[in-house]
Amino acid sequence: MAISLAVLAYLAFEDRPKAIVRWTGQLPGPDLMSVERLIQSVLPQYGLYETTVTSARRTSRDQARIMLGNFTRKGENPEYLRSLYRNKTVIEALLSVPYTVEDWTEVIDGFAKQGIYVSSHQTGKALDFRVRDLSAQMRAALVSALAHVARLIGGRILDEGDHIHLEW
Ligand SMILES: [Zn+2]
Image (tube, rainbow, N blue to C red; front, side):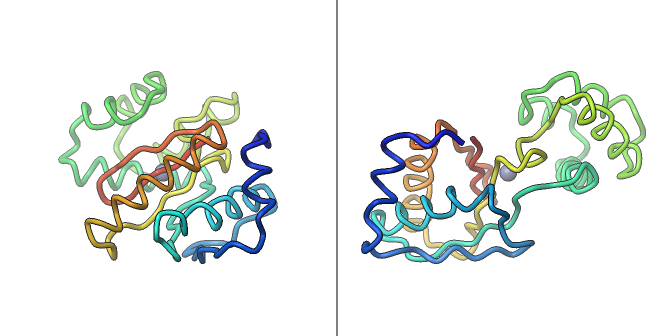
């Protein structure tokens, strides 16, 4: 992540209220510390004092398991995957093999070894935020706050319905 002047300005005000970031999986490594600190600083400006990260860095197998789970829930509709993921080559390769975690892991891992990723979670440059415990107003505030964080780090957010995805 490039540390912009805007990011430095945020981190300079250490006496401001901080939001608590909870991690349901493994704790963030050093690479995520600066993003975590930004989230802690930006969320209180939107009236939010805690948030839960449900997914960060993923192995090829994690990615395969999650994609296959969503694909199955969507009735194995190829258009669901084609519209959600930007890398069409990987998606078409997944659709051409049996719909199992083993087969999908092999495809995703084969591409990853060539530096081709279907998700920024694979490189540790994405976070998913829980929304199920938020009111509509708090959910909207979280979307605005994460869009603010995304602007500061040159990233973007995707509202995926059951969670908000931030990537950079
Ligand atoms: Zn995500």
